[in-house]
Image (cartoon, rainbow, N blue to C red; front, side):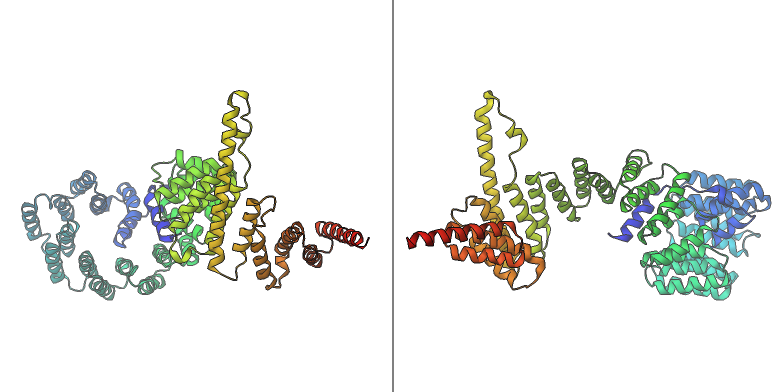
Length: 573
C-alpha cells in the first residue's frame, strides 16, 4: 500500500477536535506558541488567556484575529480585532488586522489607511507595526507591498529576528525555498532563541532536503529540550521518510506535552499502525474513540486493525460504526477492502464480493482485487463468475507477467467448471410438467462443461509451451483429457501423463512422488486396456517402488499376473 496516501487521506478525513481539558494555559503561552509557528496549539490557549490575562488582551485579540482570518472566518477575525481595539485603541496591530480584511476588496483605499496609520507618532518607529502591515499584504497574496513594508521594518531594526522570519515567509510564498531558508538562518543568527525560524526552516526543507530539516530541529531540541512540539515536527519528517519507529516514539513524546489534539492522536495511531504495532495502535485508537466517538479516523483504524489482528467479528462491528455512525468519513478503497476482508473471513462471500467490487470501482489500478473477487466466486463454486473476474485480472497484467504462474489458476477454473456437478436447481427440476426443460438444461450444462474442459486444455497447453521444464502444463492437460475421455477409450491423456512423468522423474525429488503415482496409474491402466500386459505391469511395479503398499497397484499386478499365467497355461494345452 502507498503509505503516504494512507496517512494524508487519514489526516484529511480527521475532524479537528481539541482536547481542551489537557491544556495547561499559562499567561502568554498562547502568543509564544503562535510566534513559534503553532497557531493550532496557540488558539485554545489564546481563547483562555482572554479571561486570565487582562493585560495582554489587545495582543491576544490580534493573534486570534489572524488565526481566524487564516481559517477564512472573516467575521470572527473582525470580532477579535475590534475587541482588541475596544480594550486599547492605540494598539495599531488590530487596526491593521481590520485593514487586512479589506485589502483584497479595496486595496487602494485600504493601502492609504495603512500608510496614514504608520505615519502616526506612536507607530512610525514601531517595527512590529510595520511587520504587521507587511504580513497583512502577504496574507492577501500582495507580495510587492509585503516586501516594501518588510524593508521599512528592516530600516527601523536591522538585527531583529522577526524581520528576517518575515522575509523568509515572503520568499517561501514566492516558492524560493533556498532564499527563504537563508533568511530563517539570519533570524537564528540574530536571535538563536527564535523558535519560529527553526521550525519554518525545517518545514521548508521537509520534502526537499529532510536531513537538513532534521539537523535544524535537532539544534532547537538541544537548545530547548522541554519544547516538545519539536518532537511533533521531527515525527512528521520521519514519517514522510518511512522511518515509522522513530516517528512513533517522537509522537509519543509529543503527546506528553499536554498540547495534543485528536488530529495529533490520529497521527500517532496511524504511525503505530504502519509500523505494524497493531496492539498499541488499537489502544490509541480506542482512546481517541473515547474522546470523539464519531471521529471517522479512529473508527476506520478500529476496523483496519481488527482485520489485521484477525478479530473479524469485532472488525465487522467496527465497520458498522465506521460506515454508518461517523461524521463525514469520506471512504477510500481501503475501507471497502478491509470491510470485504472481514466479510470474506467470516465466509459471507456474497457481501464480501460487493465490498471488493466497490473498492475496485473506487481505484481501478488495484487489479489484485479482481483476483480476490475471482477467488471468492471460486470458493462458492460459481466458476463462471470466477473465470470472468480472473480473465479481467489476467488482461490487467503486463505481457511479461502473463506467465505460467498467472495462467495456471485460469486453467484450473475452467477445469473446475468442466468437472462440476449439475446445479441443484436443474437436478431437482424433475416434475413431469417441466421434464423436457430439465433434460434440455442438463444437456446444455454438459455442453458447457465440455467447452470449459477444452478451454482448460488450451490454457494448460500454453503453460506447457512457456517452459519446457515445467511439468504442470502437461500434468493438467493429462487430467483434463482424462475427463474428456472418461472411459479411457481413446487414451487422450496418455501422451501428457508420459510427458509429465519424464519431466518429474528428472527432478528426483520425493515431493513429486504423488504426481508420478498418478501418471503411472493412468499409463498402466491404459496399457492394460490396450492389451500390453508386460508394459502395464512395468508401470504398476514403478508405483510399488514408490509406495510398496499401494493397494491399487498390488491389485492390478495380482490380476495381470493371474491373467498372464492363465493365458500361458491355455496356450500350453
